Length: 341
Image (tube, rainbow, N blue to C red; front, top):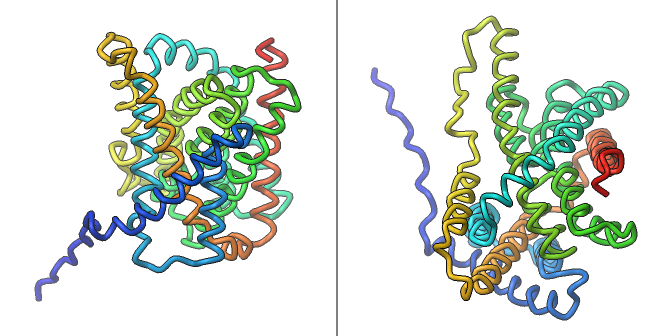
């Protein structure tokens, strides 16, 4: 008897995404206005906080979910690409090379801290890997990339993502304040945010809340850091294959895990470098990118279920806190040692 394959679910239509997109956009407009009134806090922070408040106090229905998910992922990627039109390739290359030493040190610290603290807290190996990778590289995106390789239980993935997301929220609110208290320069703060905050959206939010220059620098540092998910995934894939005495992980796909929006960011930067973007429209492009960022962060806030985050348990949260603190401190210490602060 032939077995009929179950077709993959169709992607939501624009009409299905519209309610969630409209909700995120409406809140983002309010956040943009509040950010103009309180620039020290900034629109991105207002957006994510108001999104969290609406999600947990008003609980929007399921009809909003497709649009919220779309805004939290695709719109965020569009905003990063739009930022590329304001940055030259020379600036991107220079920043990437300047930040590489700090990035490699903080990644090493993240993995060592995840291993050591994980053993102390009796957190099992797969959850340690998920939290370590999420903290070291790019938050939920890194966790999603390594999940099909190490094949953790679903609740482990949920624990790791919730833990990483919790400290992303804390970083967005705390880092700009600490940056001002420590009297960090724009570049110093950008390097700190880009190497010590996990998720791209949170790096962008914290960076631009501090200043435009810090946001530009932090974005490039973070995108450089995000590309390191490729060698990490390859190492994990070979380790799993060796352990299981296989030739390779059956569902591992380099094409699937590669963050393609980074390539389009570089294309946009190349267009800017070639002088194809008139200077007169640069402010408009920056404003569009800023608003897209606020929309995306509002959507991420609208996805944050605080009750579920609280239910993840103490040990993963303590592990996430310890690894995040180690990375944050090591980033500042390395900058101090090499004279970049």
